[in-house]
Image (tube, helix red, strand yellow):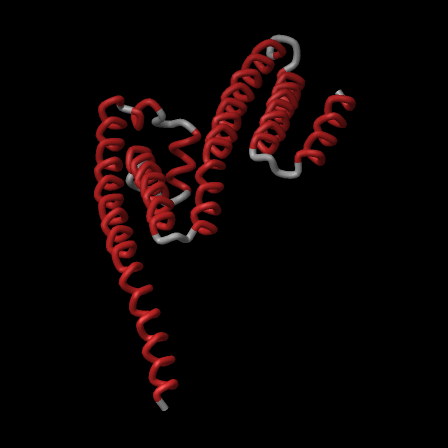
Amino acid sequence: MNNLQDVFFAATTNVLSQIATYVPRIVGAVLVFILGVFIANWGKTLTRRLSSAVNLGKLLRGSAVEKFLQRADMPSGLDELLGQIVRWLILLIFFIATTNLLGLSVVAQVLGAILAYIPNVLAAILILALGILVAGLLEGVVKGSFASFNIQAGRLLGKITSYTIMVFAVLAAISQLQIAQPFVQTIFTGFIAML
């Protein structure tokens, strides 16, 4: 009977000591995350104000970006979208710090990999945006160049030029995202050989 009490006492002491050493980590993690929420909200407000000061929404008025935001049911505009992106990035950074404090290294590694992938996504978006701009510009140039000869041929060649540029832009963006790179390389090589 005494042996059973000793085992139970040792197990209870062990569990309570582990809880006592882990409680400060939990309190610290909660405080870090609360600080992160405040900083994220501040970053969102600052980003919205900077975007409004630069008149970024007015610069993109009538562009494909504004049309996309309207179709995506984002009535608050580009300023709010940029603010939300900054807010979630800051929250992700503080969530990684929180998981590190709790000793959840696997979760922190996964979140770190997601955070490290974000520049690839931004670069792919930039590649697509530039591809759209260049495709539209070259389509207009080709249409204008051939308009005096044959209007129908000018439109056709303009569309062919635009779609060719867009195919290159989409392949470059997919390659930047590191999705199926051998497949994208094969398609790119085949497309070049076809031209």
